[in-house]
Each structure stands twice: as C-alpha cells, then as structure tokens.
Length: 575
Image: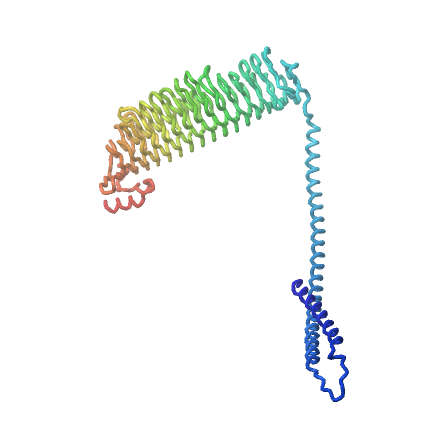
C-alpha cells in the first residue's frame, strides 16, 4: 500500500509543477500578448497545442488525486486493522498477566505449604541434640536423640570411637570422617533398637568400622563409606538390619559379616577393591534367616596368596541375591569361588546375577552349592571365568537336593590344563536344569570328556534336563551331556546338543530316560549308550530319539525343540 501511494503523490507534485509552468509560460508567451494588426492572420496552432497539453495534464492530475484518495482510504482501513490488533494484543497481555499471577500464587501457596510442612518437621526434630568433636572421643551415647559428628576425628589411642548404648539414636556423620580407633570406630551395644548411622566415612579401625554385639533391632546404615579397616561391618545377633547405598573397599579381613541375624537387607551398595589376606571371604552370611542382597556389586576383590569366596552363605535359609555382580575377582594362588552356598543352607534364590571374568589359580567351582536344599539359580550369567591350574566347573550342585538352574547363560569358561564343565550335578537328587544355554566352555586336558556341557555324576537320581541348548564346548575330547554309570532315573528331553565329540552319552546308568532330543554335528557320535527308536540318515546329520517305552512311534515328537516341520517329515518317512 505504501509503495503505490508514494509514487502517485510524487507524480502529482510533478504534474502541478508542470501545469504551473505551462500557465506561466502561456502568460509570458509573446503569442498570447500581441495585438493583431488589421487584416493580420494570427496563427493559433501553438496555443491550441499547449491548451491540449494542459487538459491532458489536468486529466492525469485528476487520476492521481483519485489514486491518492483510494490509497488514503486503504491506509485508513489498515490503520483501523492495526488498532484492532493492538487492542487484541493488549487483551491477550492482560490475560497472560492474570493467569501468570494466578499460577504464581498457586505455586507460591504450594511452595509455602511445603516450606511450612518442612519447617514443622525441622522444628520437631532438632538439627542436632549433641555435636561430637575430637575432644569428646571416646564418646558414649546413653540417651535417645540426634548426634552429629562436628569435625573429622582421628580416634587413635582409643579402643572405641563412639559407643551407642541407647535406643532411638540417629548418628549423623555429616560428611565427616571417623577413623583410627584401636578396636572399633563405632560399637553398638546389645539390647537396643531403632538406631540409624548415616552420611560419612569410617576408616582405618583396628578391627571393625562398625560392630554390633548383643541383641539389636531395627538398625539402619545409610550412605556410609567403609575404608581400609580389617572388617568394614560386623553384625551379629541382630534383627531388621538395613544397609543401603554404602561402599566397602580396601578391607583385609572381610568387608561384611552378618551372623546369627534375621531380616537383613544389603542394597544399592558396592563391595569393591578389597584385598583379603586374613580370611577367605569378602562377604559372609552365617546362620542367618531372611537375607536380601539387592543390586550389590562385588567386583575387583582379591586374595593374592590364599583361597577366596566372594560371597559365602553358610547354614542360612530364605536368602535372595538379585541383580548382584560378582565380576573380575581373583585368587591367583588359591581357589576362587564367586558364590559358595553350603552347610545345610536352604530356600536360597539367586536371580539375575552375573559371575563373570573371575580368576582362580587352582581347581574350582565358580558357583558352588554344597550340602543344601532348594537352591535356585534363575536368569544368571556365568561367563569367561578361568582356572589357571586344575578343573573348573562353572556351576556345581553337590550333595544337594531339589536344586534347579533355569534360564542361565554359562559361556566361555576355561580350564587351562584340565577339565572344564558347564553345569555339574554330583551326588544330588531331584535336580533340574531347564532352558539354559551352555556353550563355548573349553578344557585343556587330553582326558576323555575334558569339556562337558552338563555333567551328571556320582549317585545322582531323579534329575531333569529339559530344553537346554548345549553347543560347541571344546577340548581334545568333549561331550554335550554325560550321565555317569552311577546315575539313575535321569530324564533328558527336548535338548539341543551340537558340536562336540559325543552329543549325549549314557554310561550305563539305571532307568535313565532320554528322548525328544536333537543331537547333530557331533563328530564321534550324536548318541552313545542311548536307545534310538528313529535314526533318520537323510536329515543332514540330525538324529532324533523318542521315548523307547512308547508303543506309538513318534508320540512325543511334537515336543522336540522348535523343529515341528522336521518331525512331520520323519513321521511321513516312517509311517
């Protein structure tokens, strides 16, 4: 609009100037002022031409004025539209201000309520009833309340840094460090309850960072860093113990010990980089009931000269280990066991845990269940563990009843110079192995069956091996599944066994039932000592066995691991 308006006005100014010029020229023109002489013919052509030009310019000027009026009208409409938009913008701004004020007020009310609520709590629980300083060590708490460590304290020369001898005590280390006590940095005396220790560092004690003796109940330890004492935490004869978000490192005796206690939880913690030289375990659960380890790392621990159990569960019941890591630990001169469950422990569940990349100097069972009942391993990984010398069994169930290994991956474990077994059942009754993958485990011996995927030996009876994938476990001689001659009533069904010297071998056991398995690409024999009702020779080396007691050929073949089409073809070829 502005673009069309300005040129029109410019033209009009030029036209007005031109018109004025014409009138002035006409007035001053000699042709317009001469008086004609008598009988003289006056030539009027130039005058008429100029008049004509004036008329044309007048017409153009009229058009330009008309265009100016139209532009002025449009400009008026545009101005009116701008005014309307300005009004709407103002109204919108007013609404925004209103709602912003309302929202701010609402948030303020909420915040004020939160502040008031927090202040009320703070007012009812003082920041600290007592502030403990270096001058107070060795200090004994004898009354309920909140106690704070006012400064980092070296308690050298004192047997105990702080003793708790009362109920309802909150000891807040407040980010400070308590260290150097000759015996314990903190001792909790018996027959007390409702104790919480939090937020700080305990280090360099003569024996324990925290020791609880006697009958204590309802103890919480939160966000504490245990460092460089022989033992980090020692709890005995206690009930309802919770340890959360703590770290344990550089201990030499053991990092954690729970004994004769009930309802113990260790969660969201790290037990790493401990160098054990006095004892043979990093964490001990002894004679306890209802114990949970949840999301705890036990990594990079070692015993340079002797044996080492990363977690030892002894004579305990109803324990759960879930989402724990037992990785990268080593005992280069001794026997390393990542998990040792023994001595009549029962009702133990190990779920979604990893046991990977551990090193044992000598013969070992990386995961051992010895003389136990009802122990279950579910969805765990036991991978890439090594024995420098002697046999290695990744998971070994020995002299135990009703134990099961389910949905686990056992892979890449190695014995440098002896036998390597994926899963072993030894002298155990009613054991179950189901839906596991056992693969790429390597033995270094030239003995027969120097690498075995699933090894059932001793006086084992009533075991079920169902739907496992056992493949490519290698040595000079290897076997996928081996049943010793002393076994009985072992049921082997639905397994896939691939890539060994012998696939499935029954060494003259008693009443063992082996059927619905797939064994192929095993170089010496797919089956040894196993009755095969069907032996198809046209199926690229796949040999399928069915239940020899069945009177109907192929009755159970629909259960064979994911090869229904192959079964149909076999039934067609064997009417």
